[in-house]
Amino acid sequence: MLFTYKATNHEGNTVDGSAEAADRPTLVSMLHKQGLRPVLISRDKHGGKAAGLFKPKKKVRLNDLVIFTRQLSTMISAGVPLARSLSALAADTENLYMREVIDGVTKDIESGQSLGTAFSKYPRVFSEVYVNMVKAGEEGGILDDILKRLATQVEQDASMRKKIKSAMMYPIVILTITVIAFFGIMLFVMPKLANVFSSVGGSNYRLPIYTKVLLDISNFCAKPTILGPLHIPLLSSIPNLIFILAILGIGSIYLIRYIRTPKGQYRFHALLLRLPIIKIIVLKIAIARFSRTFASLMSSGVSVLDALDVTGKAIGNRVIEAELIAASKEVKNGKPLSEPLSQSEHFPPIVSQMLLVGEETGQIDKVLVKIADFYEEEVAVLIDGLTAIIEPIMIVFLGAGVGLIAASVMGPIANLSKSIGTGN
Picture (cartoon, one colour):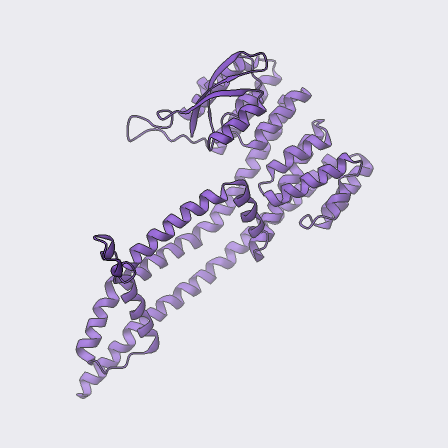
């Protein structure tokens, strides 16, 4: 959602602006981090809506973000002033929303805000880790180097997401088609067959158990038995299938909203770390992100504590982030990072052992890059293997379902045909 706000800074001056945030408390938190005290916050009802049906989507592709990051890094390295660099990139980009975002960032830079603070107003474009790494680069005077590393990291994240989406696309499509076909048969085919069985075979005709099960499911889906006793106009005539789908849809919306809350997100991430196959994928991705992000920050001169704070937010799993926060407290008390990670429930021993080697040799960044490369390759191999396994499994289940439905339909029809032929 887009909000407009009025706030006061440390000097007592009034600052007007707009920013995107999930809700008002999130925006208030963002403003406090920027040293601003909100006075008035209102939702911009026109900011997220266009006049026509064919409005451009407010979305920035990862490829656009990579190009923007690389070009900005190159221009800063060449000594071009930041505001001029942003203006040139805004004029050059083809994505209308990206141009709008860059123009907004440019205005914030010209008004004296830092680049990281300006980026933080657009969480749909610049992730939390992106913003934090830019802030670390500004503080360390190595913004151009940080942007180069960010571009590489965004490219690798995009590649990993593409592989995961590609692996999931086939089973999702097959499952969707199967579910639609199943309920189509239940609603339109089975009721007609039930009439045929009863009219031709008579009331005493015994159907196979699997045919009776399918007929019972068909009757349940088509008849308004749940809301019928309530005698509510319109609602009482809704078929059970529509009612159940509506309930599932509403439940899914509320579940998604709950998962987006900090408490719900933590529980959802904890659940992912308990599921057999998903746990392995989530852990490997998290360790790869931790290793590459932490290595980038350490090689850029960021302190260990600041690097841990940024890296924890970049992993994408609240449970592992909590472990890194606990590890950060022990590092603050004088312990090396390898020690608390060796006692971690989720980090494998190889990470703490490699970290220990890096700490002893003073090459933590190089060691972590090797760990990141290893786990990213492991994720790619695992996803490819799952894709190869999922396809035949889905085909087997789909074939079994089609065979069961065919047997449930054709078996009784064949029996009826024989009975009619013999005159029984």
